[in-house]
Image 1 (cartoon, one colour):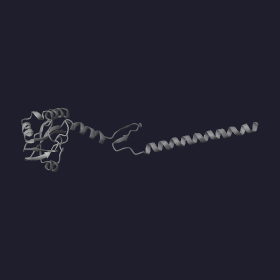
Image 2 (cartoon, rainbow, N blue to C red):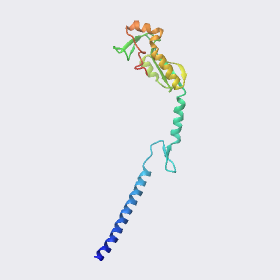
Image 3 (cartoon, rainbow, N blue to C red):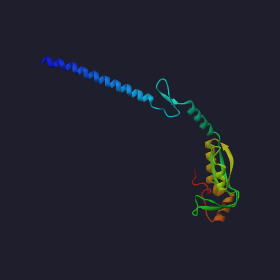
Length: 174
């Protein structure tokens, strides 16, 4: 019996070494996979193992923040008498005369609409207030909610026999 006990102990140590070796190899393999995974564009791994945005991504952030300070409120007005899309009319269209407001909006992107799009809608783009995004959003809200108070509103109502809460090109109050 003593003999069998002594033969078992080396096998146990051998198995422990095998398990330890396997665990170490798995750990090394996991580290290789971890460090070889591709990072998404815009993310960098720092020497200390932490992560941070790339200089390009930080630059993009600063540009976007700066854009928020350079916004404008605009109106889209009818360029000729005729029927225009009306998002809040039962018929889906409304008759507007030249110069009547079709939509109010704000943008911090100077390329909000392409010329082709404006031509297709039959409207002209006229910015009328400039400021940061908060200021412009407030002014835009004043004009959208204040639409029924505009002098031309009565004419829109009389021409179309319909009351609108907002300009015909504004789907919602946003």
